[in-house]
Length: 492
Ligand code: NDP
Image 1 (tube, protein in one colour):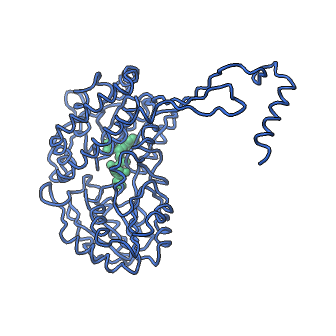
Image 2 (cartoon, rainbow, N blue to C red; image 1 turned 135 degrees about the horizontal axis):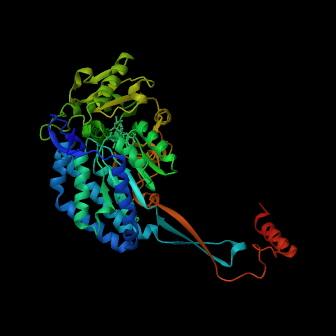
Image 3 (spheres, rainbow, N blue to C red; image 1 turned 120 degrees about the vertical axis):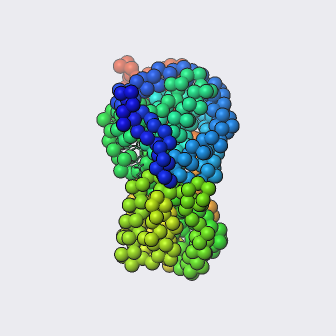
């Protein structure tokens, strides 16, 4: 649709397709203009220093806190999730914003390094410089929490940010930029460009100094390829197929309760949500019956009418349906729900057991309220099956005695032991994955470092009598350097 010569798109309520608002589609030229303004705003934002930026960011956090009901209601309307879930999401985002603001100075201050014996006349320091302008491309499943992991950490590190929200949640993105402009010295420090995938592509090609992407692995590869043309570095937070490992000594009641929530809340649209369970055969029947029992009280519905909402992105339901169908056709057992659970735009809880490891429901991200429970003979098998996946984002391990030893053998970026997804709520630990789940890290000190680059400064305190970096270096100088090398490195 075109309004006043500007191409636009609508944000819809996924429960009933009601049009919530209309937003402009930013063209390549529009994106370029916004990125240029962000680049112009960067030096002043950097020169505010950690203290000045902390003040602005904490003021923003205060504003978000004061208006928490307003943003939670908007998130709920754009995604269809219950307002209490949206409120929880906002509180987590505010926690990350405050942590980044308060800790940037300590994490990013210059560090002294030892210069080594041959360079003993030098001081060595590493300082961290902001990269400049960070482009952030966000998804729709957690439209404030997920991008805030890049936005807050980038801003605290001294960068300016241009954010492209998902086409399903543009209102949340625009609301974020509007509230920031109420406390910021310059609107261009954090701006939003709305649009579809093409606007995201334009941001990748706009000359931003770093691009932080959250979304599917497929689009992540397109983003990385676009950015490679201009050597723009990327942080990629992609999907997962997160395993839950339940050992024979686990607290089964809590494990079942938390796993069901992890798998079904937000309609299963959580990149770090439980997708498959490997449970020790000794306790499998008990665990499965607890999951089945608990799932009976869970149902989807519009906000206010269910524990979780609809699929925010309608086409996701085709994928969910195809995974259930594939698993069932290969001999899986549906102990809760099945293909009948799909009642567009909602999907009722589905629990599948004995699912073949090569079925799509195990190998691909389902991103719906579907959980697979497979029995294993021991924890070695659970670890091996968990690691067989192409993904490696998060995991959850339930065991009284062996939690840490199991966790340390998992090929993934984050593990919650006797808990679920809790690493996302701890701002001091990094968030990110390996394999097809992406690379780079947001959150924690690593998240601040990610949006800076190191600059090494090596300074001569005095000149040595023998110079090694001069054409006047003598044979004696050569003998000294070889002698010292043999002395310090020649003994193995
Ligand atoms: P995408 O990965 O396609 O979209 C994520 C973001 O990238 C959106 O803002 C999107 O814009 C943008 N985008 C799309 N195409 C391009 C492009 N060529 N260049 C730059 N940016 C682009 O995810 P979907 O929303 O289509 O969801 C698909 C699947 O992704 C889901 O089924 C789920 O498996 C996974 N997913 C994972 C998430 C996670 O947290 N890791 C979050 C969301 C989805 P626009 O929305 O306007 O198209």
